[in-house]
Amino acid sequence: MAKVKPFKGIRPPRKWVEEVASRPYDVLNSEEARAEADGNEKSLYHIIKPEINFAPGTDEHDPKVYEKAVEQFNLFQEKGWLVQDEEEKYYVYAQTMNGRTQYGLVVCANVDDYLNGVIKKHELTRRDKEEDRMKHVRINNANIEPVFFAYPDNAELNAIVADVVKGTPEYDFTAPDGFGHHFWLINNPAVIQRITELFAAIPYLYIADGHHRTAAAALVGAEKARQNPHHRGDEEYNYFLAVCFPASQLHILDYNRVVKDLNGLSEEEFLTRLSDNFIVEKKGKEIYHPCALHNFSLYLNGEWYSLTAKEGRYKDNDPIGVLDVTISSDLILRDILDIQDLRSDKRIDFVGGIRGLEELKRRVDSGEMKMALALYPVSMKQLMDIADSGNIMPPKTTWFEPKLRSGLIIHKLS
Image (cartoon, rainbow, N blue to C red; front, top):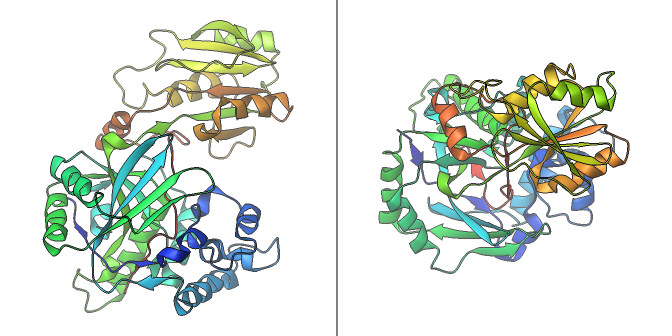
C-alpha cells in the first residue's frame, strides 16, 4: 500500500513564480536553457541546469557545476525567491492543455515503496543518468524537481481535490508554451490526514514520467538511511517529491521514429520487404495519422503510407509483444533496417508527439532523415498492465504532455 506524507514545501512567492518556474531539466539542452534563462537571474535553470552559469561548452558533469547548483539554491533562498512553508501540507497542481485539465496531488512518496515495488516502473533506467541526478539530489540535499506518478482512480480523493480547487489558487499562469499551470495549498489538518489514509489504501503508484529522477531520489534516500546509525524510518530523507494524478485523467501521446537510411535498400525494395508483414497502402501527400492499434504511418520520399500489421505477425497474448512499439521495432527497425538497439544506434532518432507529424515530414524533407514512422499511442491501461506484470516497455514508448513545471515546489531532505 502506498505511503505518502505532507511536507513543508519550498516555493516561490506568488509575484515571482513565473520568473522562477521552468521546463524540466531533461527536455532541453544546455544552450536552450541558457537562452530561456537569459536576463532572468530567478530562473530555476540556474539550479537544475547549473552549467548555464559557466561559459558555453562547460562539462555539465564537472564537480564545480554541481557545486554551483548548491550555491544558486542557497542564493535563491537568501534572496527570498524560494521560501519554505511553515507547516507540513499537501498541494494540488493542475495543468491545462488544449482545453483539458488534469489535477494532481503533490505529496512526498516513500523511498521503501520504490525499492519494494509498490511504486511501479515501466522503463529501464540508465546508470549514468541515475548517477547524474543522484549527485544533484545529494549535493543540494533536496528534490528540486518532482516526479510524475499515476494512481488508480479514487472517488474520495477526486472529491477532495474538487473541493480544494473551488478556492483561489496560489499560482495561476500560462507558460510560454501555452500550457496553463494552477496550484493550491491544502491547509486543513483533517483533510491532510484523510489524504494520507486514502493513499494508504491504494495498492500501487505508477511512474508515468521521470524514471531517472525517481530512481535517483530513492537511491539517495536509501544511501542516507545506511549512513545514519540512528535511522528510524520517519526522517525526511525517506521521502521524495511526487505529483500524483488519477490514471483516467492522463493522456499519453505518440512517440515517433525517424531513420537516416534504408540499410542499403531502394525505396521499392523497402516497401516490398514491408509488405511481408504489413498491408501497405499509399495515402499520398496529405499527412496520414495512424487510426488504431497495429496501424502505422510511414513517410518516405514525399509520400505517406498506411501500414497495418498482418494477423499472426505479433504476439496477441504477450503484454509486450502486442505493443506497436515492439511490432515496429522487431518487424521494421530490426529485421529490415538492422537497427538492433534503440538506445544506442545513431541512425535513429525519436520525436515526441507534441511536435506533431509535421515535424516528421520536415526532418525527412530536409534530407536529414530518409524515412519517418508514426505510431498509435500507448494507453494508460497498457502501461499499468505492463507494470503490473513486472515487464518493462521498450525504449521511447511513452510521451506524456504537458510536462510538470519545475520550480513550483521543492522538497528538502532534512
